[in-house]
Length: 361
Image (cartoon, rainbow, N blue to C red; front, side, top):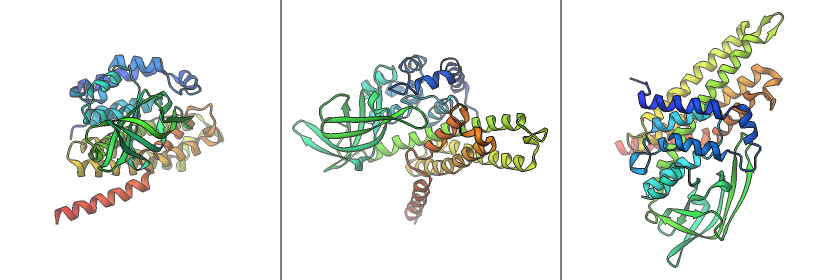
């Protein structure tokens, strides 16, 4: 099987990697995450001009990519640089907008003119028809960069079933309690009290759209996580080569060599699962969902191991705020809980396998 990225995708990777290296170095990141918004609008605008946001969506939606591998390579570079911004919220909301035909707004987001976010837990809000529109009531927790978003795609229950809605920043009935995240960036608790909303698509027909959007988000997180694991591995190997004890580099100690070898093998397993999730994304609903849940389970398990081993082999310094490694480890642990943790996805993978057996019989 050919795992090469292809010329166009490799060009995207190289361009994004160079841009982040030159415009989002560690000092810039430290400054940005301490701001009220927790991200940089100028950097986001430049990413839009480079076409990075457009790479997440297909041509019919105003982008130029949109495949699972396009999503994966973008988020891998985000992970490598530990960049913060509304990447995940834009991806989730944008996939929902594209699926419901709202391409005009999505094109504005791709151009960097509108900031999007998404709250896709349909059990957390209730939608009720209100004249010619809809009113939403409920609370959606941990909405990425909620306070910065101009528009938020919200999932809610209706009499017809799970539905998708669009709400505008500052509209009556909307309150956002924003807060910084431990791994950088920001999120917010979205509280809706009869908030005016616009229905996206048809009422009661959002389940498949939400599932596909979340699957895209899972692919993104898995590729981001593998890139972070690679960074942790490189930083730890460098430390083992330079840190000396009893007059020799601690990397010479056989016990630590065995631990690093085990970690390297586990990271390759995680990489394979992320590649498989991207490869199976367009193979039908069951194949896609099994692959993304398997990948998220693997990422959660290996991510915890990578974070723990990197910090332990660095000793006390591995926990300090001044060392970039601790920030990579925090982000990796956070990814393990986003869009479902490893326990949830293990249960889901088993259930999907049982569904497949029942269908086959």
